[in-house]
Length: 299
Ligand SMILES: Nc1ncnc2c1ncn2[C@@H]1O[C@H](COP(=O)(O)OP(=O)(O)OP(=O)(O)O)[C@@H](O)[C@H]1O
Ligand SMILES: [Mg+2]
Image 1 (cartoon, protein in one colour):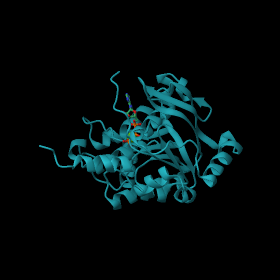
Image 2 (spheres, protein in one colour):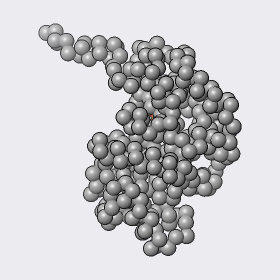
Image 3 (spheres, rainbow, N blue to C red):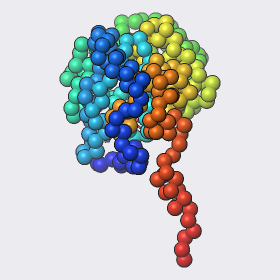
Image 4 (tube, protein in one colour):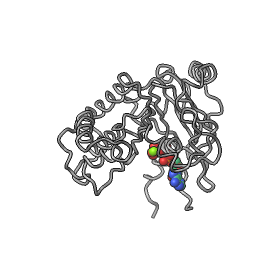
């Protein structure tokens, strides 16, 4: 396997977060993880490790998702957030650790068994991942065709409903190449929820959308939780979105969880890494590198 470039997280000079400083946050986490019955956690990750060659991406993630809640995962680019989502749906197998969906050990399932699990988990890929050769309606109806005995008419009706849900009614016959980036994302989102799954995993659902469309997606995630009791796990860099939708925010840094708690506690965190992330501040080494880059070239 080609060795991928080191993650940006690994390049920073900020001291490693050996201990989480958020007393109220860790208290929440500890309470949640230790005292709540495992039954209330629909997805559980236990000591998850993932490496690619010598690159250690996830280094012992333990996390439980509370049923019916929206958990937001934030963290620097390249820190392993998408890898974590892929482990949950069984697209990647961890090197060590366990992944549970309810009582099922996902990391040990066969491809055939995974198909059944994925029926109950919608996944919005970071890139959208629509089938380029199918129009919008066929893309959205694909999971219905695969996993239900709905008639063509019923499928079309459901397709209309979810397209309207994401604000794209009337574009059924368009091809993906004729859509804008944001429209593709919303079609992919419509497809992720078309089977009315119990859990929806979103990888950067608002990236590339204008603020109003982003807010529509936020409202949709909230509505899915409040009206259908859907559990959501949302990876995002969009702190406005996190602020609006999260019941809980988890920050991953260098492959480990460094903060985990309710949004209010998260925002009050005294952890420098958390604050820098929230406020989008580059570290000193990055700034020095940029300045060095602009020094006049010596003849
Ligand atoms: N299949 C793979 N093979 C090799 N390396 C991989 C693979 N998938 C991910 N990686 C590497 O793992 C690291 C984490 O990737 P990941 O996509 O999870 O980052 P991320 O936190 O989602 O970042 P971003 O916020 O930019 O989406 C990266 O360095 C990436 O190159
Ligand atoms: Mg990613």
